[in-house]
Length: 178
Image (cartoon, rainbow, N blue to C red):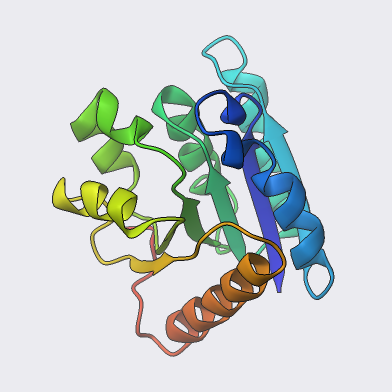
């Protein structure tokens, strides 16, 4: 399985557990998968370069799974644009690692709209996931609560990825390009 992990460089500011999440998850997944890690800088000024870098990486590596972590606002919009851009007919399945409630704090309708094509949402707690679901986030997405802790977390996540890809290939999931 080809996986691209995209992480926000300033992630650990709000949730300390999230700071090392991708740094631990990437190597744990790479034991059995082909993993690319992109760490991005948030901010409007960096957005054009970030979007181009993501497009280039997706085009070169063609991951089956793109796992987003700690992305909100215009940075999330730019990454979603890059994923859905000029890489037809290639369409990776989008996974979101939900580590905090930043999607709920501002621009609720915008964030809800930006996350509508998420096919799998992973949260370390059911309480956090339930708060988002109560606000109508992630319609139709598979939901997994997987507490932090490697390698257990990585093994459960890889299993969730596999189930998602099998469902997509068998036609149980719509193509997220809608």
